[in-house]
Image 1 (cartoon, rainbow, N blue to C red):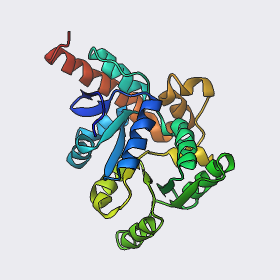
Image 2 (tube, one colour):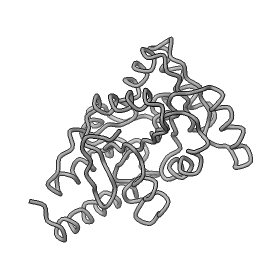
Image 3 (cartoon, helix red, strand yellow):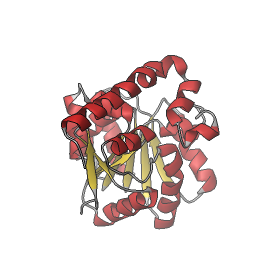
Image 4 (tube, helix red, strand yellow):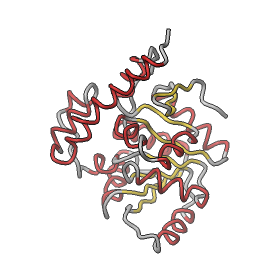
Length: 248
């Protein structure tokens, strides 16, 4: 099974999908039962992969990779390409919960500080009470990881959600994917922080068009380098590639 259309930005894949198309692919993956891995691309991920061979190799090998930020949509446009929309976990997680509830799937959510993914799971169940969701925090030592993997597999999930932030979640998934029996393993970033209410998404009017600015407003000390330095670096790299390999 392959995604209908895939393009590359700075050597990293991103699939041409809208939200419903992405969930359609996920449904097919779960039904097929073969191991599949999902990830996302945003400016921070692209910049992080520049000096991280493990992250870059992981992204190049995933079965589906979607645009998580408007920066990626813009980067594609600057290369003469088109992505229909950006899809952030804090938005699509509700669609996935609805789909999982209707299909009778079991989800496992790993990541966040102790209690965060559990709180996020409870929030989802308030709207989808029949949702089956096993949750674990993301701060286990290497010695504790085999027991964590055993607990996840014992829950028999159809989808494992890994939310540890880039590049930790991608490194963790690259190392442990073969030990996870779930058909789908899906890196989704800090979604649990937002769903649980631990982190404010910022002004609502910014979320759809300039989420980076909304996040910068809420966490300026932690994120200023990522956005104020990282965004211009990304655009400069895309434009440089465009000059080297012009697209009609």
